[in-house]
Image (cartoon, rainbow, N blue to C red; front, side, top):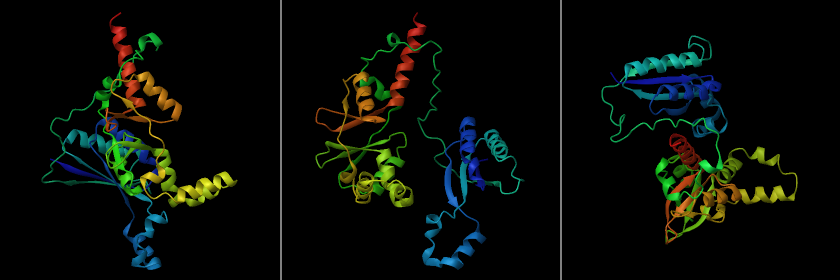
Length: 292
């Protein structure tokens, strides 16, 4: 029987460990929700009134998380329950949380057609040498490893749209900014985007860094960012026929985690990152060792 596994976690320090434990045993997608106890919420409403309900998140008072996962495998469900109980050191412990399951009559979308679990990459034990890695390997060969889809936004895209797009494609840490002709005109990296976002959420952190005129001007610039064109930096890219060596040089020189791949019309057709490149290099090392 398909079950909805629900964990209301009070001890948030256990959250990373719980995610790791569930991932290791193969628990399917987990939904994470901010939540708080009903009595806590009632007390808050007495203080701030209904119109101030949104301040619950802003004031950091939502101090628990609710995790949801739909599981159809009974054995996996038992493993997930045991793992969660072990992580919190027993749900009977005060301030640990609550775990329960709910039977589900119908569940669609748990298993996707054509979806296969990617096998773990076994790292070779051989020493990595320059001769084992073909630096002239083309970008074309890397694109098929993870099949990463680029994040593409227009110059007029607001920050919320950029963040939403990157949330939907979490393995991509660069947003490609294009003009009306769909040609690449700039890049936005995750670090720059997060600085702008958190300068509004945690401004006091940035105030503490205002030690000189340079920092003051940088903070002023962050506060003015509204759309993609306000934040984008100069564009860097590679083409399918370019080498991994060129791609790495560009990422290394400009401190970028990835690069867009362009066609001859300067339109974005793909994305590669450092992790993909390392995977290709490791596979090449492994193949070289087998052929000796």
